[in-house]
Amino acid sequence: MKKKLSSLDLQKMKTQGEKAAWITSYDYWTANFAEQAGIDMILVGDSLGMCIYGYEGTIPVTMDQCIYHSEAVRRGASKTFIVGDMPFLSYQVSVEDAVRNAGRFHKEAGVDAIKLEGGKRVCPQIKAITDGGMLVMGHIGLTPQSSGQQGGFKAQGRTAETATQLIEDAKAIQEAGAFSLLVEAVPPEVCKIIKDTLKIPVYSIGAGVDADGQLMICSDVLGIFQAFTPKFVKKYENLGEKTIKAFTEYVNDTKNKRFPEDKHTYKMVEGELEKLK
Image 1 (spheres, rainbow, N blue to C red):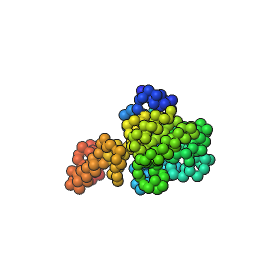
Image 2 (cartoon, helix red, strand yellow):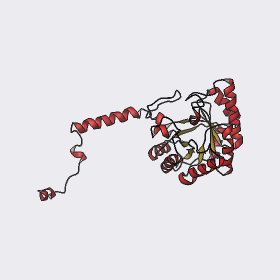
Image 3 (cartoon, rainbow, N blue to C red):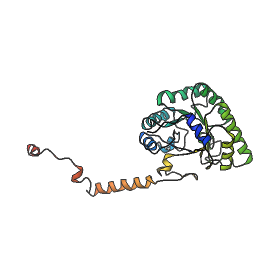
Image 4 (tube, helix red, strand yellow):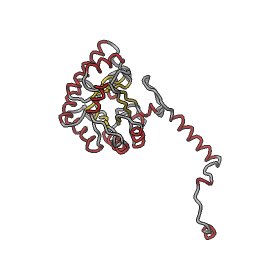
C-alpha cells in the first residue's frame, strides 16, 4: 500500500539524492490515476485557468475555484502529498489575507501545503503562514501571475544579474520558512546553483535535470492542452488527437446508424410488448 509522503520524507529524498516526480491535477480521475502511477506529489495549480476554464492566463482564477478543484483532487488521491496553489490576489494584498486563504485550503480541501509565487517581496507572507503552522512552497523564475512585469511568458535568470537576483530570492524564501521551492523556466546552471545552495528541496519545471525533482502540467504530459507547448514540455501521450478521433467516430456512427447496435440496447420482458399494441 502506498505511503503518503510528508515534508520530512521529501527532505530525506533530497538528502539521499532521490528525485521527486510530481504533476498538476485538477479533478478526481486524473488525481486517482496519478496516485496509481506512484506520483510523489500533486499540485492543484492555478494553471487550471488555462487547462480547465480556457482563460488566457492564470489571473482570473479565484480561491473558490482552486478550493473546489483541490477538494476533488484530495478525494481522488487520498494517499498523496497535495499542494494547493494560491491564486492571484489571494496573498498579495496583505499578510492577513495570505494566512486566511492558506487556512481555507487546509480546512476546506485538506491540502498538505500551499504554494505562492514571488521572491523577497512575499517573504512576510511565507513567514506568517508558516508561523500559522502550515507548509509553504516558494515559486521563483517565470511566475505567471506577474508575467506582465516579466515581459510575458519568458525564461528568467539568463544573465548574471538576473540569475543573482533569483539566487538571493531563493535564499530569502528558505530563510522565511518555506519547506521547498519551485524554480520555473530558468537555465539549468542557475537552478543547480540554487539547489546546491539551499538545504530545502528545490524542484524544477523547465529548469533542468539537476533539481531535486520535476513538475509537469498534466495536460501537457497527456497531450490535451493544445493552445501552445512550452519548450520544456515532453508529451508522453497525445490524448487530444485520440479524443478528437473517438468523438469523430461516434458522430459518424450515429449519423450513419451504426450506433447503437442491438448489443447496446435493452430488451423488454418477453410478452410485454404485445400488451402495448
